[in-house]
Amino acid sequence: MSDFTGQTVLVTGATGFLGGAVARRLADEGAHVRALARRPNADSYLQGIPRIEAVMGNLTNAGQMRAAAKGCTTIIHVAAALGSNLAHQQHANVEGTRNVMQAAAAAGVGRVVHVSSIAVYGYGYLTDVSEDTPQQPGNVPYNLTKSQAETVVLEESVRTGVQYSILRPGMIYGPRSNGWTATMFKLGKRKPTPFPGDGSGSAHIIYVDDVVDLALVLAQHPAAVGEAFNCASDPAPTWREFIGGYSRLAGHDRWLALPVLPFKLIAPLVDVYFGLRGEPQALSHLIPFMQARKVYRMEKARRLLGWSPRVSLDEGLERCAVWLRQEGLLR
Image 1 (cartoon, rainbow, N blue to C red):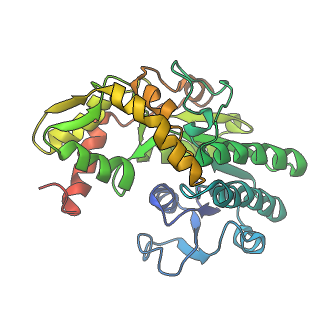
Image 2 (cartoon, helix red, strand yellow):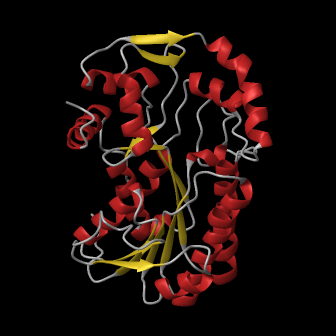
């Protein structure tokens, strides 16, 4: 059990899905949380919670980051740009991370937990992936800039001596998740549920509370210093088990396996379209990736930290159901 009593922790991205969950857990464990917000009133999820202080600031503003980090013992760096072109994501994800690391050095922060992603490995691997697997992010802006951001963390740590740990989550689902809960539920609710293929490929999901747990462990465990850790279900459920779980919440179990070949044929055209927009997506690689049976290994966290994901898929989906009902999506 981590203990943050009396510590001041800066959480970037605190107004988002994962960052908000991290901020609330830290406050529950006695920390004074500085919740970085880019816009006024963006912190409604955190308002009124004892020990959480919203501070205005942007990752891309070095001065604002230095001010936010002053007096902090720990930084959990969650914020990232998920969309738009490469230049935009490099500005936020790469240079923003550099600002975080330099602010940590200036403030004498004890440790930075940098939240990265399994996306740094790219879509090319069709077999199991460990933390030692070489990163091949390709040209997808998010994948590439998250990989570049990790390089910045290492470089700045060497230059300044700031301690760090890197967390590489999979697809995070849970209450307040738009992508992997609300959107996936809407897909699973369709009767039958359409999907490219029979759904036997691996879904690299992780429940939000497990990601928060590991982030807090990385913030304090001595064996986590200078290390990176995957955070995804191991063993991994299939897409049909994951999306089909949402289908069962909606009261059915009907699955429509769409032929994969048409998706493979149209993928290069879609890739050209997004490439011309300056936002390449590598759909040609993503389709076989989604059909493959593999896992992002969690052995390192078990061995070095004694930590494993605790929330089963069934339990995670039941927790999602409560939120889906509150949102009026599930009746």
